[in-house]
Image 1: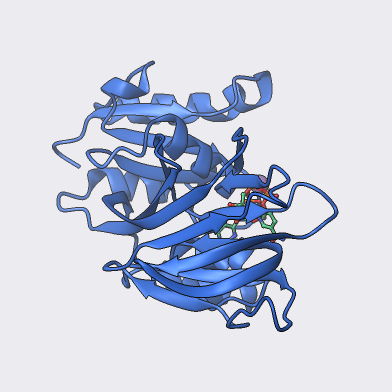
Image 2: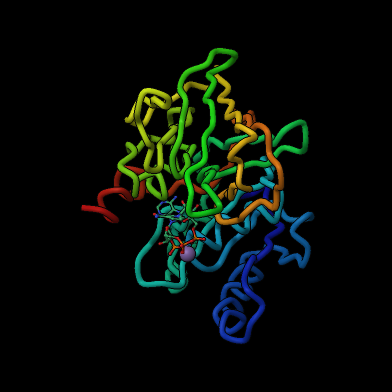
Length: 266
Ligand code: NAP
Ligand code: MN
C-alpha cells in the first residue's frame, strides 16, 4: 500500500481493547505507517471487533470512498466484513507490504426520509412497525405503484447485507459484484385490500424504490440504517436507491465472498 500511510484504528476505548490494539499500532509503526488519532486524516481505517463494529466504523467515518477499510475480528471466526483475525499479524504484514493491493468494492444504499437528509447503508435499510399492530405502506418502483403492503415491515438490503437480516427472512444471497438492492418482506398480510409479491425481489441501480406510509396507521415505525435506529417521527415516505458511492476493502486471496458464505453457513 505505497500511497496510503495514515491509519486510524477504530475500537471501543476500553482497557481490554486497548491492550489488543497496541500490538497492531506497533506493527503499523514498524512498517512506516502513521497512526493518526482522527479518522478524517486517515486513508486506511481499521475496525476492531466484528461485523457490527465494522458497520459502525464505516458510518461514523462518513462512508468515505477515498479510504480503504479493513475489519479485524476479535472473535474466533472471521466474519463478513472482517478479513483479519486480531492474532493473524503475518496476514496483515502480507497485506500492507503488497505493492499493488487488490481492492473490493461494495455497493451502498442511499436512503432519503421525506425531503430531508440522506443516509447511507452498507447492510440494509429496514422499516418496522413500532407497535404490536401492523402498519401499511404503498411500494413504488420509480413512479409506478407496485404493491400495497401491510404487515411487520420491509428490509431493503445491499448485496453484502444479503447475508445478514435479509437472509433471516429467506432473502437470496447476492454476489456483491452485482450492483443492486433486494427488497424482502417481514410478515406481510395478504387479502383483497393488501397484496404483495410474497417473495423477495431485486432491483438494478437504475431504479428507485419509494415506500409511502399511510397516515391513518403510521404508528411511528422504526427505521433502521444498518445497526442504528433513526429517530424519525411522522414519516411520509422513504426513497431508497443505490448510491454512486462504494466502500473499498482489501481483497485477500482465499477469501472471496462465496468462500466466506461457505465458511459461515455450510
Ligand atoms: P447483532 O445483533 O450483533 O448482529 C446480528 C449478527 O449479524 C451478528 O452475528 C453479526 O456479526 C452479523 N452480521 C452483521 N452484518 C452481517 C453481514 N453483512 N453478513 C452476515 N452477518 C452479518 O448486531 P450488529 O452486529 O450490530 O449487526 C447489525 C446487523 O444485524 C444489521 O445490519 C442486520 O443486518 C442484522 N440484524 C439481523 C436480524 C435477524 O437476523 N433477525 C435482526 C436485526 C438485525 P458480528 O457478530 O460479527 O457483529
Ligand atoms: Mn454484532
